[in-house]
Length: 239
Image 1: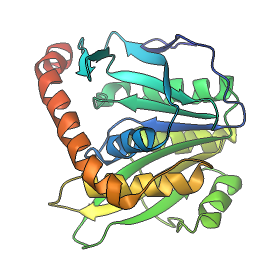
Image 2 (image 1 turned 30 degrees about the horizontal axis):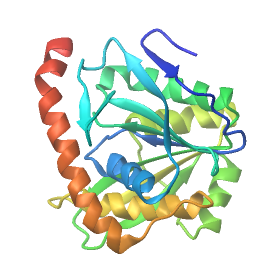
Image 3 (image 1 turned 90 degrees about the horizontal axis):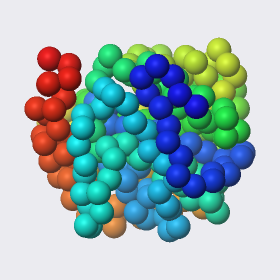
Image 4 (image 1 turned 30 degrees about the vertical axis):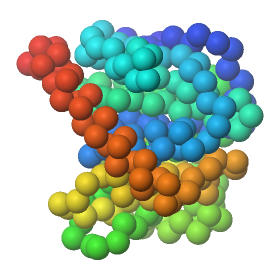
């Protein structure tokens, strides 16, 4: 279950057949990572099931609540058939394609029904607003059933864009949620809105906006600190 640069190391048996995989890598801003961390924290019974690793990931341990963590982890809720690829660090653009392919292969190997990713779009609008993109008719129907508007025209860069394109070619259900967030504002509000949208798509997932907003601000600070600490290591790898 590996490609040339990014590989998965599973530590417990994983059964999420017909379930969901959520991509929690941070991209433009930290909204996606904040959303997935919030979803994990607000939904019980997640456990560490594996990690994503690579020679091109910064060599760093992220310690949270006395526990060392790989930068990119796989968290699984067996009851909900839900897996989250959770990451504290933004992957370098040069490995976006490999990360996306690893995610797609892992989802296919574990017979997931849907892959869900997200990103923030910076605008001057006051209120956050979530829209979605689907790679298949089934993915678009799921968005509409959840009362999430479907994007008609636009550009999705990076890993979410690769997931959509490959999902279209391989008939894999990929959903990308896009939150319109203020250009100058913090990411935690957008992260909370994305988390709420994810909870509409994944049966049994739990999110409460008020508690999310209080929690997401703290998550954003932790993620920013991790990015800052990893900066010199990333520079040494990529120059």
